[in-house]
Image (cartoon, rainbow, N blue to C red; front, side, top):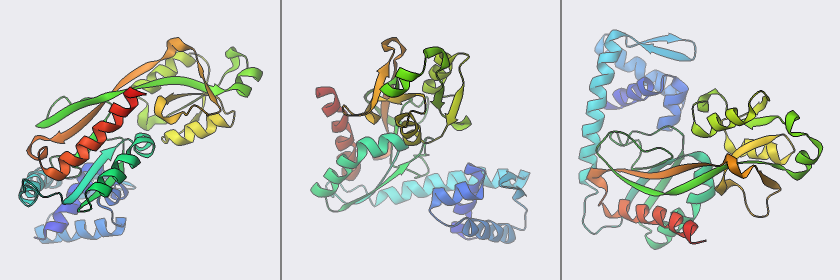
Length: 284
């Protein structure tokens, strides 16, 4: 049995779609399909039922997925042996963070680490889900909610404030009762910021939806309606202005790293740089 076939199948089992697995692994979706077919052939078992874009695991598929997850975790532990030098500033560090926060806040610390430690390579993956640190999908994760379980070292980086914004021109020509709103699509419908937006909108409609926060902000800057944005998205020179100071939502930002690798020099260097971003924000 080929380990690469198993790894591709595990990504498919976790994501539920060939496209999602391909994005997770950085390959073409046809590669995932080919690898899964090869695994089914080598095992002599049907592992997935293909139902349009989504796949459903068979009973055999569910069993193989559970065992594959254990294998992936052990493989990650073996891989980590090569990174445990007490002094070497080298290696590849993978960061998982929300897309908007990544683009607004994380470029500077990444460049800083690369400047100070040329032996460290960094991959930043903008995603809203919590990547599996156990299975080496990421070494570090930044999230707006604290994990409830797992063998992690967890540090609170700081807080971000979500506020309602619109352009002055939109507010001038649109009475509050006729405001329309800009929010997330169903993929983020349960997020605290979307819940707060829906509560504030009440009977007024959400007419523009996007999973991409930058698209929401762009729509609001074009007089598209009222939007709820984190403070790091809106600059002092922005055309957007705050609405209703009582409608502020504060969320905590957490840095998460698996306990086994928190003291690896390359991981520690990147962690320290990420922490400094929020130290600098508080100092302003």
